[in-house]
Length: 312
Image (tube, helix red, strand yellow):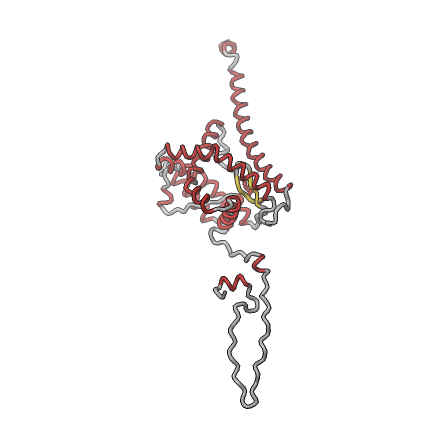
């Protein structure tokens, strides 16, 4: 009777619990929908905009530039102003602690990718960093592991695929997430699935952590804005080339093999040189042949190579 009376006195309790459960489910599904829609937009661009550009690395440049402008507008109106306010309101030690906190969580994810790449010592180091910083560093707020000599790494599933031999594919700009390649777009799906922060069950906590991480990351990039604006005549091309070069370096752990010269330089043929007339011989005594000046363009040497070697 007591339980039944309690239920009668609180007829809305069950409905409230059901409503809370529904909010949690909707919050999780909303975050997943955002990620899915953003990746889907990138895939649609890849499938629907083939061969719209002369650049083989960026065949859907028209679509990418539109997405780049969208992301730039979003950053200009919302993300950058919030990051500037965050930087102005919080002292540097607190901002560093926030950055360290999220970097410590990422070490778990990084360790998994290093292990998948066969880099066991690096994976062990990442796991060690997480243990040390989570305990001595107070949940990662203080980066004690770096001071102990445990190196910080940066890995994700896109890099893992690259180590496995999967090619870049086309360059694509994804709404909200920014530049990727076709390979990194597939890796992004796994990155989101494996991200500990994105998989926190409590909706309010997860959304707060995600928002703080985005603002913290953007605040750390504020000093680079002026450099990019001054250096880039075409910001889109600058960001694209910088992204591709950085990803190539990360995949090879900073020791990327040299790429071939541009096709245009390789296709330049050595200009024909007219044959020199044979020296006239004297009837009395043959005159010694004067040494010929060595041509800057020897057989098999392109114009670009000659200029690089200082021959021209």
